[in-house]
Image 1: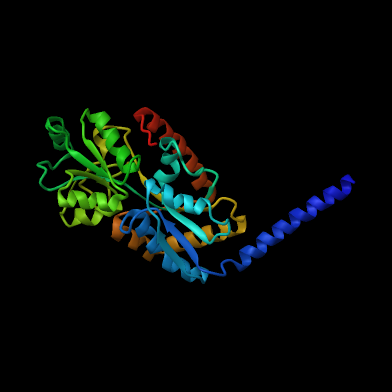
Image 2: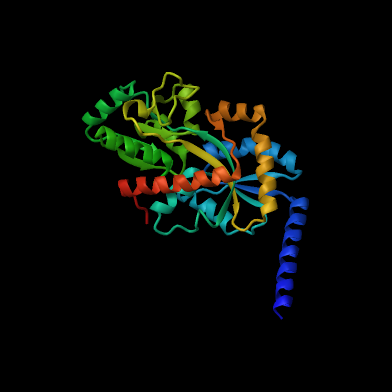
Length: 323
């Protein structure tokens, strides 16, 4: 009896492997949705629209970018988490959705480490603290001094509560001993627009801020990464004033948890091939100043879990909670 059961188990396992292999060989047979968690113009949207056309060519099926915004990415992420695990609904998302939101949202709609599966890292960049040109500061030190004197406190816009943009400014506030009033938006694009219009005095923005900085519509004060930005080489980093304060903004592609391994592997390989093309890297850099970021699946997964733990500690220190 046990022998029959063992044989049945072996045959079932072999059939599952064969089915997955056949699935990968035929995948895709229809168009693929790529869910973007923010409005058009922000980093994930730019990245997805750069990636989608060449990825479509490689896969032989259309990759359709669809914006599903809200709750710092939770709305779009939940769509993917609850989709069929077949590789036809993908998430192009930002770090904050996966490694920050679970620590701040009391009613997180899905488990970011289980209900979605990492497929490929795509880009890495920084965020920049900028001011409306009417604010009479040109350096980070002048910004800090001005903020200390401001009464009422200056207002700063971010791409949402508990976004990287938000946490960067909260870290600066603690280090510099200053106070600013947070004005969260649904994504970086409207936050930057508010600073350009003068509705807020300060904005912390990523790729969506790059063109407005280049055009002189907002004035960059400091960046958040370890090294200075290539397109703003004279702009100092926060770490040059406050050693150890460093934040990068990274993006990637996820699938629904339970997606067959061969499908995930195929997508990973094809995305990496697209990212390795110089034209892709040039487009990403020219639009938003980001760098292509290629990793193995194992490296990306390990990095996500490390960042998850790191931001958990930061969120607990800052005591940020969203009901």
